[in-house]
Image (cartoon, rainbow, N blue to C red; front, side, top):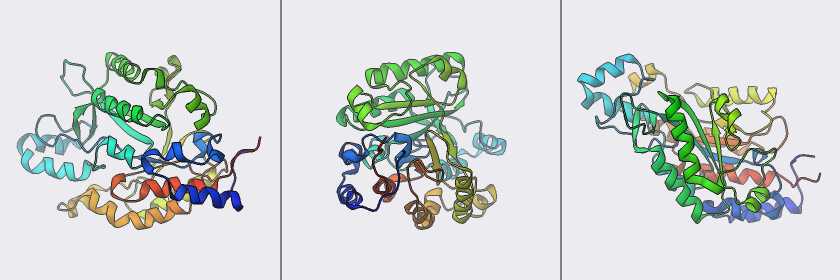
Length: 330
């Protein structure tokens, strides 16, 4: 049997315990009833486009090639106007990765890119611009946080590789192994907190490249990410409810409650920012999250990812969903 909803004293005990959980260590503090439930059946808070708080809005790096050509050209001649505009709509997180982990985030959406004509083979994160911080530096910051929180497990989702050569991928894999070493979790069938604690594994790294995953047993397959591609909360909710009727994926998966602004909307709201929109739509989207149920049911959720995760009670809302689970009895 998988995890199910319960309405017993056991649930009341879990609820009471979860209410008092410190978010920076919530995994270490969850009740023993949840230790043997696979992580892909727990409710886990995630950060969409996690490393955008350090985008390089100065002209030290170009507008990335995924942006419209018009913006790339305008940046060459009107950077003082164009770059702040792009920055306001490209930045999806306000605070550092350490602050995000401290607030309870355990899934990091990380988009990796190589700057054009950069002979150093350094890698960065990107969204509109490249970041000022390298991938290696951010990975080291995550490792330092993990060392201070030895019972917390973090899923690092590496995807949207921009401009990476084979040499870049080799360097990225080397960086992952050099930074995480023994705490890097190899692929396994049903990772649970108890299993990971007993083995000392804390980092699950997923990779959006089937070939690399097939050749490396310490790298996990890319995680399905539900993205509604809409700027209207009601349309996002409708899309996700429709997907739920088709059944959730069997392993890890993400429901991303991040909205996508259309060029037309941005053009009419040049003085606003993505953060403004997120703050105004959080009540409706968080209301939907509160109604969700983790577990093995076909309509259950797993990871929920959002923008500006340190600016609200988002992570606590997601973690609190785990009170609806009861232990496996197989």
